[in-house]
Image 1 (cartoon, rainbow over the protein chains, first blue to last red):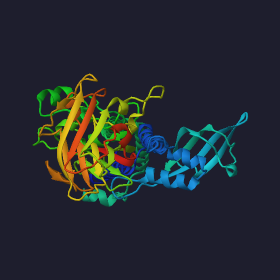
Image 2: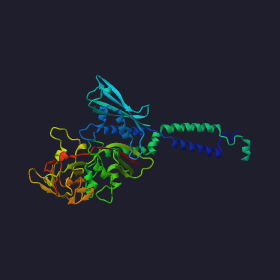
Image 3: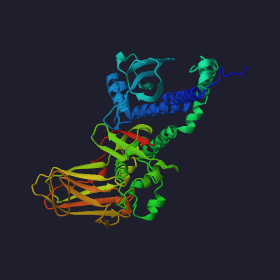
Length: 163
Length: 338
């Protein structure tokens, strides 16, 4: 027997269509899809900023004077380093500031081994961070630093992330 | 119709077929939307493109000196300079030292005026010589010194979404020659500029880093006179001489009225000679004046400054001994493109 069981009546059809369109609209408009390309751009911005900051700190402001980065390392002064790099990576041209954090590790040669020492910064918990590095010539390290006290080139590695 | 509805008690209910069908549709839709989201976004959004343009603009501005490298000295009032010679607006001092901007270029870049034929015109020159591309991008570029209060900006107010990059840079400021006068024997102060002493290192030493060179050819040079001990001393004359082929006799150099030329400031006010001087007296050799008078990095120039009272003991004042650059200053640049 032919009857109208399991058929859509006009009002239900319109309602269902409306529901589907509304749902599709909500899904598309509310979800931010992070594609690999966009992540790459965000990483690139952080990486550029981090390497810019290291380069500026490593460039002497006057001829014949040591750069600020080398000075911080030879005095083993993570507090001054922190003041500088935080200001460099977080300052914006308007009055606001960014929310970037950093964590620094120094790698040096210790005999036949490669040693490393933490040089201040924020605690890193698996945030989406980028790594920038710079080779710096340091004349000496103070005895308390735990790094061989001689003229050497060390690798300064900085993790930068946004909170 | 009314009779049928009375018979069927499922009126106003969604059928089980419909619910199952709709669920399958939604699951399929979510799968498809997730899997091709990258494709959809690249088709529908321009944000990636804007970020890339902002990045490229940042690289051109901070790491490139522009084309030609001394574009800030071009006389843009000529058709050839504006439309053919000027190819790219970079603010760097040299390709070899990226991230260090030249203040002279910064000043020229951030002071457009379409009504003044010697200045850049916003936005035409910037779109064609900096942002590039066929799409009519709009932009906002700002620069702020960290330890000073100086701030530069150009462009429109940005919308909510835009391509963005931030760069940390240093700015090289023009050189200053500090000269302390004395009340000794001579009314004339002679500054000797053997320009290769500024640009070429002494024999055996490595080439000077362009970030630390005093560069009177491409930047202003401020000859700052201090310590006038006799009251009411007046500067009466200012002359420049060029030794064409030493030791021949010096040739006077023209000092034109219009820029680039040499200007005298007392307490910050522009003066013409004769002028009463104070301990805040500056003689500015403007950028581009030396090239205008065909003086180059190997020229031998003397500046003769005459006063009505004794100011010097006739000692030799070599420019390389009295001139130095202020320390490089740190700055942040933001580029927004949409």
